[in-house]
Image (cartoon, rainbow, N blue to C red; front, side, top):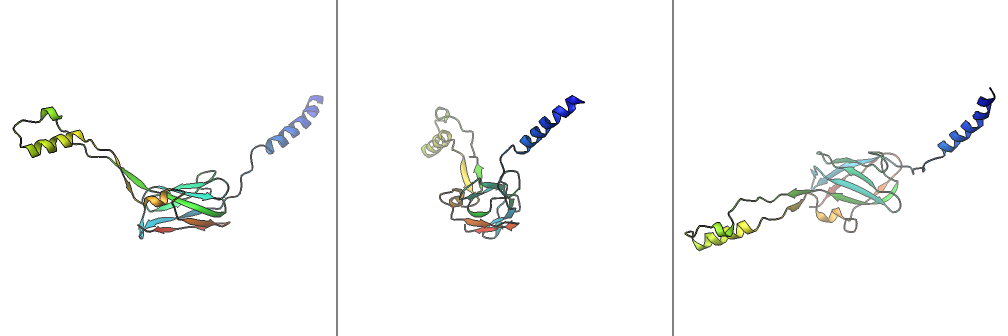
Length: 163
């Protein structure tokens, strides 16, 4: 009996200590919306909201152009206040590589113009190219003109971007 009574203050102290552990997270507000370019939905990409101070919120753009922001957990919202907004949506286009013989394999009896084209095509494999689905200016913190204000409570913030 004496042992249980002696442990009780230690257990209470431990519970108080554990309840005070961990950083307190600032309040966030739910944010969702839709991204379009000239009225047409953007079908892939990422949206970031950068507050003046604190952690940025991010969300993926779905096939309908809709997004939901999360700061500390998926879809938990964004910090209230004024935000810089960045939207990145692009495709990586793979070059079409034609299997061409190396320069030394070009048949000698071909006309000179075809030989030159053949040699040039076989020498240039081509690099992957980026196709911006949303203009590139919106994809950088320093270049994006987009701003938004997140208020306490639910927020719907849509962007219809210029091409």
